[in-house]
Length: 344
Image (cartoon, rainbow, N blue to C red; front, top):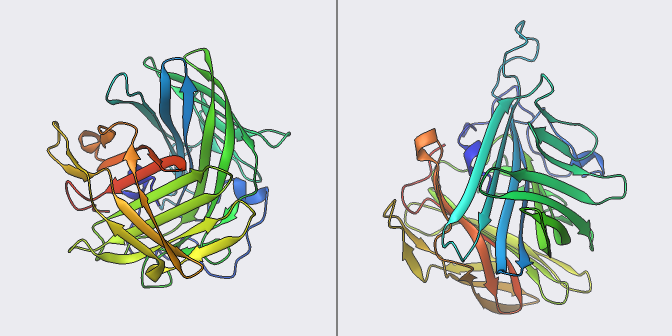
């Protein structure tokens, strides 16, 4: 649901030369870890929290691939038939603000590529890939921070929605192919020093997502203590209500509950106002979800209030995306469309 900067390149109407998302299409691995260049856009999105001698920090590494709509047989080798974008961020409470870096390039020339068949996407010296031993690897950063991390799966993937077909609106084409990989054990280095932690991978590909009536969304992904995993989201309309909602809950014993539109309640709370953008963000929401006929309520606490990313100067959106904790778990929260409605 997130991957905002790339979504700004995505038209609201399904284009005829992009592959549509359809229900009943089985996901296959390892092929679906790799790229899907026939779709308009996709992303590999890893978020997590690491423990250091200076305390806990949050991090994000995201790679995007987009197909701008230029014909693949364009005669120019320089035509951007595929574009790769990458973003990395570090939430350090000792600093109080996000450190972040971004890169973008047309695919090709050995500089940027999203491979087929398995996870391997690169942009200059940034890279995210799956090794032969099944572990994921990520390298990203800039002069302010450097991430060199390894992610060891401890559980299988979660197919979101109906077997990986995840609705995001009232119309069937407002959907993505979507799976998550929770409880990744993190090892590696931050700025050359050893770290450990836990992480979460989200993978989505689509050719259209948001309904025209949507102004933004909220998304929450949590690694729960004991091995459970929780995904919650809502797409908001102009009045702040839920145009669509959903998610999933996988218990520690592996039982999966797919959460529908009526199984998620989201209450904005704990507002924080950015001193830069003046946007107000509900960084401490109260969220409820229903499993087995019973409602569960969770209170979200950010690792630090200021995890705002303002990419408007580069043509991107204003959004809040950061590390959070809940009683019995930790993960990431994403908020869009609060400063200004999100426009594609």
